Image (tube, rainbow, N blue to C red):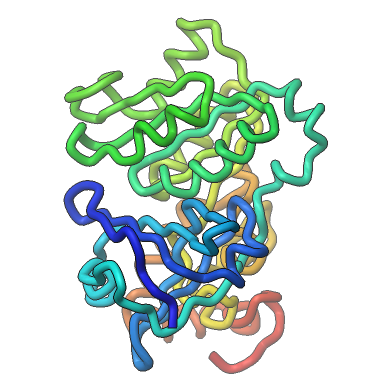
Length: 296
């Protein structure tokens, strides 16, 4: 069993908690995720690792209530336990494999939308720990839904906050904030890492393409099973079949077919939709390799 500590509500319907999982924290890296089960018969939920403390053996998750299982998770209090925690899963951020001296020469910006602030934090924190600076744009629909502002500010060079309704910080979308930084503030970036809602990442990639800024996006929003077996996070990247949970979750944002991924994600939520996708996609529907042809 995996004990919960420091369970807390961040804003409406968004929660955070630390989980005692020493085997996970001994090996996890920024960009990876875990799968949790509340009880023996519970649904398996993939959640991005927001932070980890190797000394305490705890991993931090941030999640938004979206259904029955996440509601049950939100009800857990300090001292309660998860039935199972599996991980770390997925590939770590490419940033941690680059030579530090090369990273120090780059101007990096992260764009975090909503709960996307959670997976941005460990990457920015890792960079700071290695003497690499970065800028962050933190966006939400309104001030009341902003999360992790102070935490993100502590690990970046400059933090820019944008709200769609203008209730706090820059009035407008994160893409408009990026355009303002580039066109009016003279900012130049060598890399953008965008994590948040699918539609936000799509338009971020379109914006950065206009400025020739290489862009990485995290496709964790479409993950279902988390092991490559269900086919729920199947997508095309540069014309090739990929699965977010085993091939990612991070990909080249300029190569991701966002329209297909978003449409497919909606279809996959129903039994009829899953059956139709299996018929349409044939041998590429199931399995992490995309070509195994096993029965779903």
